[in-house]
Length: 472
Ligand SMILES: [Fe+2]
Ligand SMILES: [Fe+2]
Image (cartoon, rainbow, N blue to C red):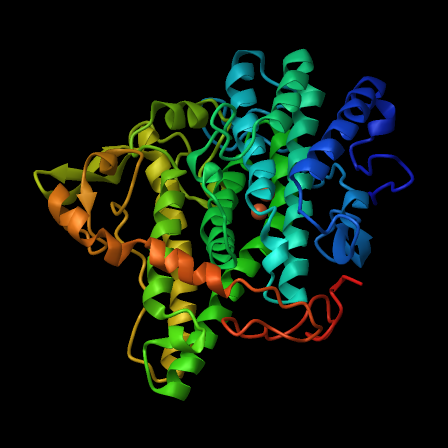
């Protein structure tokens, strides 16, 4: 297994030194990336030492090394999973042919668009999270935030590598454009809706890492099946890092639930706000919001684009290689949602254009696992309440459900009913103001904000009471 050469300006396992043209392109892009990072990266902490992991190999065991690093000095690099000897295309019209090592000419535009769309989400999330450091609930959480931020930065590098290495001049232009769009900017917004939403507080951030980073996992996993081998290998390694982001979301919300339950038990009340906790009803509304905007990221139920990506061999299904069918899907169907009057039913639709819906179904099942775990915490405290995922039609802006108002339980509502009740289901201004009022920084070693429980363990075998960020 090839280690990574850290003597190079850009650590990599792609033999960058042998490709002078690419090396020059990336060396020109590097200072622009750093300018972007200084402008749009974590605000107020660029000079601090942070206990971060850095990728040092792409080996499943021991791929990361932990040490104090100042974020602008983080070794962003280019790491692809090891090539699989004799890999063939696993689905679509080219199934069985050798995986492409170069961009297939006829799919160049489509492939570039796929890479740019994925790439755009990476810096977007760094921008969305840039002010959170100032209100961290602990040094442990602060460190995890920065870990995610530098890794999203590295994911941007990963996509820029593909653009620069395989798409020539237009690839380089796209690489520049990735640094110019800004989350939430009216004139130059990021490409996807959820990445232009604000992440104003830590509860939103934990929800984002649980629900929205999980969309990333599913997009990356289906791109990891790609017949374009460099994209597949890039995404496979990104998924290794992504797992930590999902861990932060799942355990983070779990810790909030834990703390809420402790307060409920202690004071024998549901109203934990007066004790400085986040009540379960508020948590439910945040779940409803973040889950629904993340569902939109999968696109319309019926999509010719999705069908084309698959048929072309560019983007597969989640765990494509594990599936036992013909991997062409021309003669099969898939159940997708349908509106019949004011009822939501399903119908069998041709499988290929339903691929977005299928990926969304995989995502929904995965989301439910976290809810089950959080509900275990509630149950352990002998509290008779449950957190739930709302119906997939709830609060949607893309696809079939964009045209209707749907309650969390799946009932189709009139506009008037929706308006009368939406404050029960989505975070209200009062909720946001309350959550915001809790966002007071806690930066003493081993201390945690009152609204979140400490984690079960620290990072990389370090104790929870470790100086994860040196602020002095
Ligand atoms: Fe990412
Ligand atoms: Fe992520």
